[in-house]
Structures are given as C-alpha cells and as structure tokens.
Amino acid sequence: MEPITTTAIASIVTYLATKLKDNQSVKTFFDDFTEATVNWIRPIFLKEDGSEEKIIQKLKENPDSQAKQEAVKAAIASEIEDNPEAKKWLQEMAQIIATKTGNTNTNTMTVTGDGNYSFQGISGGNIAINKG
Image (cartoon, rainbow, N blue to C red; front, side):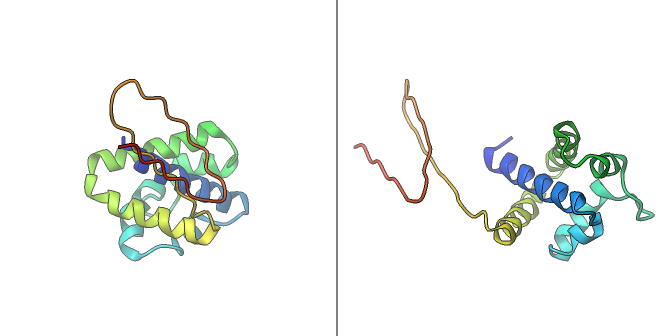
C-alpha cells in the first residue's frame, strides 16, 4: 500500500480512537466529514441497523490498544483494496482531520539512484537539497 494511503488510514484511526476515548460516538465522528465520505466508510464501522461493528465496539472498549487500532486500520485498508476509487475519500478525511487537529506538517522526500541512504527529520522549516 502506498505510504500516503497508510498515513491517511493511521490518522483516521487515531482520530477515531481519540473521539471514542472522549466518550463520543462513531456517529459524532461522522459529523466531521462529507456525506459521500461517510457513505463510503460507514459500512466499515456500522451495521445496516446502525449498531456498531465488532471492531468498533472493541476499539471503543480500549481506544489506546494498538491491536484494536490495527484491526480498524486493516478493515479500512481492505476496503481500499476492494474499492481503489475510495482513496479520494480517504485523502479527504485525512485532510479534514489534519485541519481540525492542527497537524498539517508534511515531509516529502524523493530519492533516485542506487545505493542511497536517506534520513529525514525536519523541524520548523524547509530543507531543499538539489544535487545535479
């Protein structure tokens, strides 16, 4: 899976776990997103009758559990694999979450060639290295 997709899934699950930890419902989590996005992700979290899926119930019981968070990440990743067009909704959700949480920092690194070692740790500024 692409790093961007993996990062977006992680931010969604972390945001959901935080909402559940604050005793908010999954339905409250949905309030932050567009209808199209909710229509895509809702079946992963809720059954047709509106009750929570088992993975969400377990995450709600222990929102700090890495294993429970990984289960939800896997469910989202599986849905993306079955429906690749849903990546646009995944990215939309990640952008909305980044805006709401104030976590809009991004680091991009492009490395070409063989035998390269790359390390990245940017804090408080931009670094651009161009080697021609």
